[in-house]
Length: 243
Image (tube, rainbow, N blue to C red; front, side):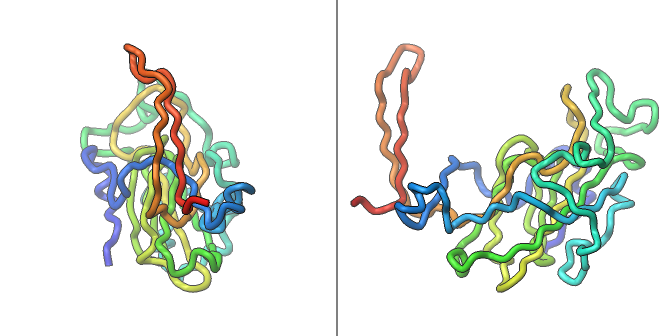
């Protein structure tokens, strides 16, 4: 069984593993009626309350929490999506020309802060609706800051540092009947790459499990082609058979 090696986080050339290729975002529906109401039986929203544990660094993070027999029911509750700093853990920090650890810790190239590098451990328990059982299921996170490792039912699923973009993983091989355990670990600083923003971590945008669209048609209606490119582009999408 594949496992996640936290030592890889130090490597600036390692920024994703088992992430599906980027793709256009489409919502799938089982029927035209679902499309009309905007409610899909082929998607499961994972927003809401997750179980949560905070640690000041990787060493202090709870080991083995991703295992199926580790009971996380006594952990704190946290709202998702949200930065953990907005939920009472740690404090938001703004840094411009200096690193947040300057004056407190010497961090060399190929290393990450060791003494203070907050780690957010999340767990979500969920059951797939009957309409999604026995089908391929992908999970998409629209934003998790910063480095994120994901497991399902004790199996390592993948890793990404693409904090502000959607990233998708295939859950199909790891799903089981009944209750599924979805652990996620997010760290503040994973590889020393920097820009001027607020320093926060957490599942900052919505996440959902859904059946991927495997059959579709696209119709492009180009209204006008100007010298600088397309003046107007209309895209019509359908995964349903025509009336």
